[in-house]
Amino acid sequence: MKTVLLKDVSLHLGEKIKLQGWVRNYRKASSKLRFVIFRDGTGFIQAVASKPDMGEENFEKVKLLTIESSLEMIGTAQKHPSRENEYEFLLEDINIINIAPEYPISKKEHGPEFLLNMRHLWLRAPRQNAIMKIRHTCYYAVMEYLESQNFYRFDSPILTPTACEGTTTLFEVPYFDEGSAYLSQSGQLYLEPGIMSLGRVYDFGPVFRAEKSKTRKHLTEFWMMDAEAAFVEHEENMQIQEGLIRHIIRKVIEKNLTELEVLERDVEKLKKADAPFRKITHRQAIDLLKEKGFEIGYEDDFGAQEEVALTEDSDIPLFIEKWPKQIKAFYMKLDSENPDVVLGADLISPEGFGEIIGGSQREDDYDLLLERMKRDNMPLEEYEWYLDLRKYGSVPHSGFGIGFERIVAWMSGTHHIRECIPFPRMINRLKP
Ligand code: 4AD
Ligand code: MG
Image 1: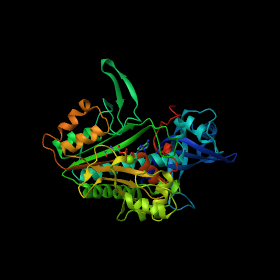
Image 2: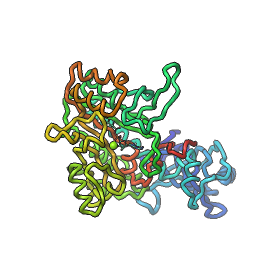
Image 3: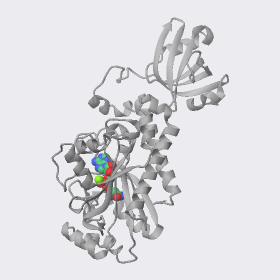
Image 4: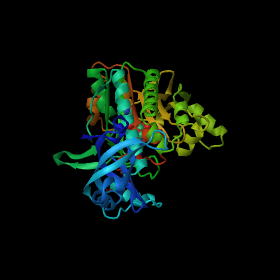
């Protein structure tokens, strides 16, 4: 007898097969008939337990099942009598593996704190299952696209001696005789040596920011994909980002229609985003905000409200480029046409999911970079290796970093990114 995954059940209709999984729910129809909603991670099916068909002894075993009990089911799958594209499972026998005591998560509304405390169990809920599958697709799509663009995977360290993105959000860890290490905020600085060897590289892993903000877009541990490419300048950098995001959208639509339906995600909105991205300068964005009644200056950064105001008129992502150098990182290259701004862009998602990518062309001139590092009072001896890259075969180069959970939140239409990572870490949450 074959053990079959529910996602493949349509290939085995009428065959005697075995399924392995958990009880999502059950329903007593009569003293002789029970329905078990069964899941195995790849899908759901309704199993029909009929006393006359199974025999008294086997039917008694079905009566022991509780929500989230684990078991093997033996029987045959067939087309659901009334629902299109659905199947049902006619039970012959079951092997009980574990009978679960009363399950703490019920159908009634639970508050987010309760569910987050129960994250280890909450992950089994259909919505959470769907979000994790979409996360998986996004991950795969990133790899696939970067492979097609000749990027090599090049992993950056997590324990680092210095900051990449400013010192205000660094997590400090005691580190033997060296004093302190810091958890990486982005692998970017370490990708830059990588391109001098491999041309184009990317990393993908957890990064850490001691964010004090309690917003729906901030985690203290999140996943970032940083990419870096030699001989790529600002414009091409944005083209690569656009290609990548549009590839992710297509893959999610191709692979996750079932999950998008579970999540009640408006797929049309995603389809509309798969179009040439919009682009404005930071200055134009400020003008637009002023027109909309915001009190904002030409050297200000944007908060959530500003991001929404800038993107509410369209379903297509928006690049905001050429930021005032004062409010961007030391490594961003100055625009030769206007040295007050940098050749950097943030990509803002539609539908209020915020900034999903930060990227820029990098300063490749030794003297200019040194000057900017001095301006920021950076400990130069710690960054000597980084400056070396501007001495030995410096080339124009660019890169960007994706906030992975924000992409997943956008694709899945999930309001808060804490549901877009298996175990979220936030200012007030470290468990489970
Ligand atoms: O814009 P950021 O800070 O850029 C960098 O770290 C660059 N070094 C990346 C690079 O060029 N290789 O961060 C990149 C993205 C943001 O656009 C945002 O989507 C996400 O990371 N992000 C967060 N996501 C969740 N929680 C947080 N606290 C985040 N902070 C940034
Ligand atoms: Mg940013």
